[in-house]
Amino acid sequence: MTRILLLTSLLAAASCTDVNVRRNNAGVVSLSGGHTARISADDLVIVLGRSGFSPDEILEHGPGVRNALAMRGGAEVRKDGQVVAMMSVLDGALYVVSQRGGSYVHDLYE
Image 1 (cartoon, rainbow, N blue to C red):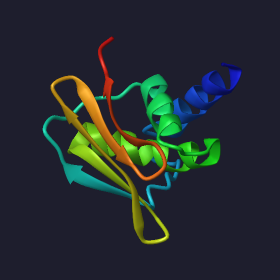
Image 2 (cartoon, rainbow, N blue to C red; image 1 turned 120 degrees about the horizontal axis):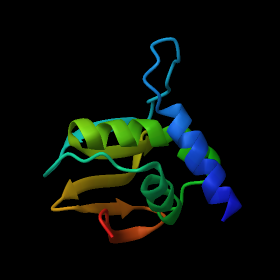
Image 3 (spheres, helix red, strand yellow; image 1 turned 45 degrees about the vertical axis):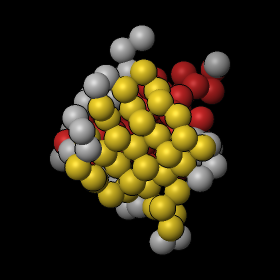
Image 4 (tube, rainbow, N blue to C red; image 1 turned 30 degrees about the vertical axis):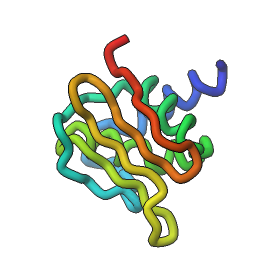
């Protein structure tokens, strides 16, 4: 539980809007999804963790995924040129397909 709280705090800090802070969005591609949504850092840590991402990968890709879902409603995460996860928002739920975590739906408004 402590690990999730720490990752949530770090992810929230990494998604700040300060122009002096460089964000690494490499490996994340925005996709047009059904709807856009502002995903909480808690939900994002849970989803990426369930999808098989390590804590370091969550910190690396989390801000890019969060921005892609907020701006276009979909995100694709790539590693070594291969798609490892795809996410899309539709009707208050985040639909996820990942190599390591399988396919599932995460309710965003529980």
